[in-house]
Image 1 (tube, rainbow, N blue to C red):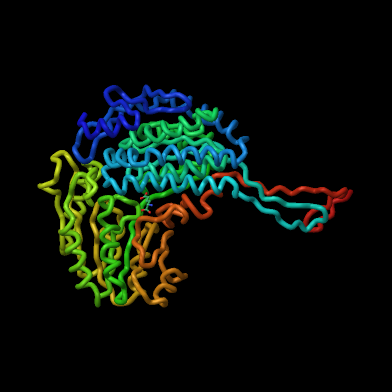
Image 2: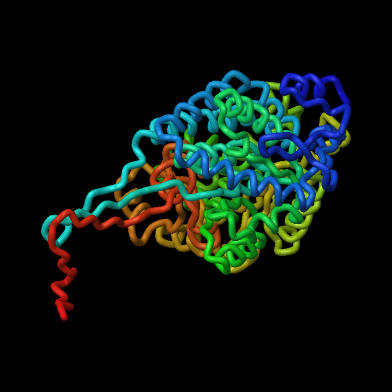
Length: 515
Ligand code: UN1
């Protein structure tokens, strides 16, 4: 193991010289298949992780359920205090965890650290929430009756997260789930097991120090052999899944067929629209960050750019300059803005997409190939790419498919209505952004004839949302909402409780049933 890798791992108490335990349910184990964690920057093998065997998964689920039956009786503000301690413990290790995200996932350091900060932020939010998960009191039509709407803990929540946010997305779910009184079982992406192990170690110490069963935050690493039984288990009340539309469809149907609950965060295919009155000094760098940031591997990455004809020339000139100034580098170095793609396979998907663009005659303004001068030979470095289209055939796969790579497709429009139609003419509906100073455009954009995505921004790029807002998308993105807003309401079971404190037993609607 390289020194850079072993330094990062040892600070987080991971000994990669032996097989690493990838299962935690109050105790550490792992005797299933091995997954290999590989560094996307250098190609080196970071660790071999023993995932959950079938038996261990069953055991972990049983312990998680048992933990729930204890944890649900801990008063919510006391659960909040535990979340506060988790927050402190994560915050103390923020930079080390951020470096691990960079090492294992490949995103640049400021984004790796930012992702851990997102976990810290949602903990703060959940601490407050633990004293505010209020139900309601409803007026009854019957005398001396009250109706309450009561939230109670839900049960076991399974979180299946993706490689691109190996820390934050689990954080959004865990913090709310804990505040709500559930036990959570995490199955991370098979390619980022070390991030999940490091996070779980930190959380488990907090739980154990407080005499709370560690299985309140269980971990089962593995691939679909672990994911599928979790999704199908009737003892999992809520499945929160982040990943592709293809797998999301399978997960959604499986959970629905057993009447479980889901939160789905699937594909994004996000557009920015630039109006003639946009402030280009804000819009150009923001589109650059949206498209190049995380090497185009956020669900919220900007993949489509619609420019008003009157600003298209200048915008593209400035954007091209920005693209050309960005060089690939070691994501662990603080000056680097472009790291590798997460897997070697992603480079193949990138090349295929570029070939398709060439075949339909689009102009590749910048990019289009793998770097031949990347800092590390074994790394998955590709050039961020801008592809300008003469016309927009909105049903072409270029516009309708999410390619998880830094490719930005550009179309040129004359009227805002046309750009909004293009924005909405895709199956996905995660994020979108409009650049304008004109209030009339803003009103239309956020209104009934405006953007149909779950995140609708103005003079703010498509990616980089704060935790206080509900995060998620409409249509084939899966309609899920996580993080802020009303997302917490999905992590509890709701009951309408009608209480009669009179000496009569009147029926509602005046129904008379006296014999
Ligand atoms: C994701 O890409 O799955 O809004 C999550 C953002 C981040 C989260 C992205 N806060 O870009």
